[in-house]
Amino acid sequence: MNKKVVSLIILLLTFSIFLTAIVSAQQSQMLVDNIDKTLKSLEPLVKYIVGDITDSTSTTKASEILFIKVLFLIILIAIIYKAVERTPTIGENKAVSWVITIIASLLAVRLITTDALVNFLWTPTGVLGVALITILPFIIFFFFIEGFGEPLIRKTGWMVFAVIYFLMGLLRWNELKLNPANYGDVANIPIFGGGDYNWLPFILNLSWVYMIIGILAVIIFIYDSKVRAKYVSNSIKAGMKTSDAVELADLEDELRRVRGSIVKTTDKERSKNLIARQREILERIETLIGS
Image 1 (cartoon, helix red, strand yellow):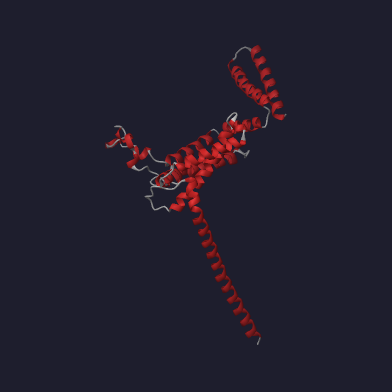
Image 2 (image 1 turned 90 degrees about the vertical axis):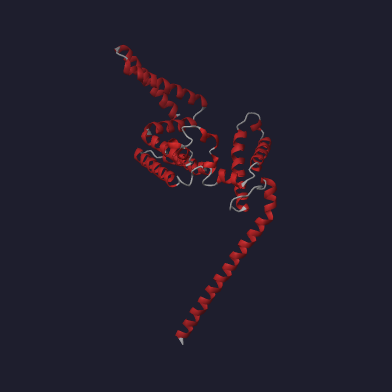
């Protein structure tokens, strides 16, 4: 009897779980359908704001192209507003700043009328796509890794970063080659255009962006101490008053000159005076940094 009850309970539980899964699947599908309906109803409004695609020759869906244009609009608004905000007189008025930002951003986005242009600017194989994928991580990683005080951690981080970017450039080399049809008049230059000296396929490749970022990482790895010193110095100056920051910069320049003179001078009295001046400068710098 007990076995039958247990079996019945297990059967009921299994059936309940199965029904729940079906209901959940139906609810999920309903949610997806509702989202699709909402997006389709908004599509005419989005087209009116950001402009329609007049020449669609690729297999990319029109809805995806519109979505990319909306994302591009958001980025433009952020960048243009920041630029307008720093403009004298105009930037002081927030209402005017927003009007200029929105109008300029909409005009820029509405000029992108073909899916080929959208793909060229935005997708992972386009100019903006490659720039965003390479430069933004570099900027974020720079401030992250330079926050560590230990040189070994920083150097290891930069070396790993460089290796990853070199590998990414090599792996995407064929994918990021520029179409020969877009070479234009450059192909007519003798050293580039054909024969044994056709360097264009090698030069006109967006993978070079990865390579350049990788080279920058190697340079930072080599000059780690100088980069770190400059980073710390700028961080300190950012938290100081303008007058103190200017004085600190002047003192650093004078300190360099004094140290150079100490090395070169052969006069003992002059050397003594220079060392005393060096001590004064260092004490003043320490005071400014500590204040």
